[in-house]
Image 1 (cartoon, one colour):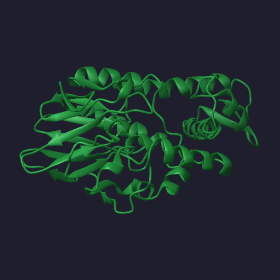
Image 2 (cartoon, rainbow, N blue to C red; image 1 turned 60 degrees about the vertical axis):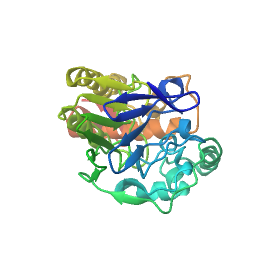
Image 3 (spheres, rainbow, N blue to C red; image 1 turned 90 degrees about the vertical axis):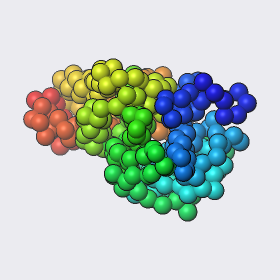
Image 4 (tube, rainbow, N blue to C red; image 1 turned 120 degrees about the horizontal axis):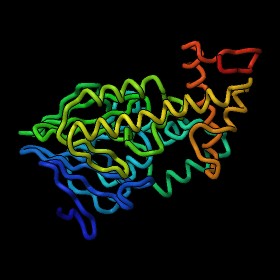
Length: 298
């Protein structure tokens, strides 16, 4: 362990430094990366912990355009890159807020929160990368692994020769996969989890509180549990559809958030999640529309 600033800890995995955020990286915090080669260095996902204490870097890579992953971006004049699918949202806070899909009144409040609490200003100078792009830092490479579903451009990074795969918000938490934004996709998220499962690495790093998992076997065990939340949501929906229900009733029943959770995002996220599960279950013949706008387990 070392420190990159007073009171801040960096844990080394080979030459990959994990800049540990407050509360072990639980939202709104997160765990950033500092990767050094012989020629250049880069930071991945500058979190709130980097506000006022940004370690020097020649490049900044962003896994996806969500506020907690870019809170410390204002400390960098270095080139900033994100996947093409999230480039518009990184360049403009307004586009980022619109992607959440909130009613206008609530969207204005979220915009203020991003500005004041996360220092999000937008980076019109940001440029895009694509799947497979390799950043050569000198004796060390960082390869983009596109993992869409959470957002269209959500990406991980494979760092060699250290054998470190950063999987960002495929974060292995008990909350499970999040695919509730306008640009999210359950189908893509499941494909991304399968892609991660097929990559052998020594270490697997998450942005949030699970941190770094050592060994492919342990990572796959945790990934399977994380993916199992999707199956539990399917099962909960099928049980609720023992009698005909509308999308609005399913939204109120909740597949994602516990009953005590409140906020303007809850209704829209629950509705988008419900529709994606419904579409998939209808396609599999497990749910039928028994009358217009009412669905029942088949």
